[in-house]
Image (tube, one colour):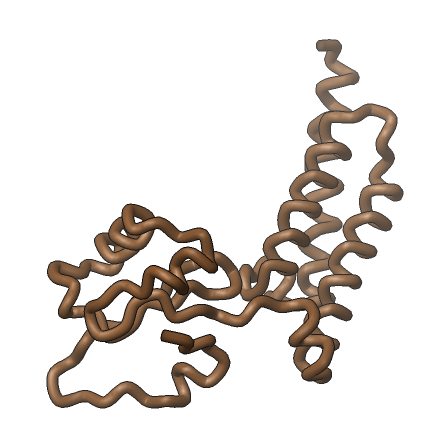
Length: 169
């Protein structure tokens, strides 16, 4: 690699990361949050665009800036529509699924989410669960994460925590 090619590579990395920081400041922290499957897809698209700009000599910083702005603008519009429209939310977002309740796995719900017993057990270990009876609820979130709510002595689970969760069991 020539010195001039190396210089342009470093300049393009500096340029595109400066652009992404500016875009993130304009559109906010949600830009890289993984709050929905659409956010996750947007993050992958941004990574792909960044790689294309840096590694492809035919891809200009201007094209990259426009592509990044378009993806992040669409993500912002999408998240706004999901927040403001129940119909849009029901069409384009997955409801979280209850996959464990009061220490018992819910096989039907796990199957619906394509979560195996071994997958759930791994998530329980991550959540520092020692016994199944320590689990009040395990929820497969719309992002693909598993939230584990521990059984706490003398504590009732607020139903508000299960507001949008499909609790079919």
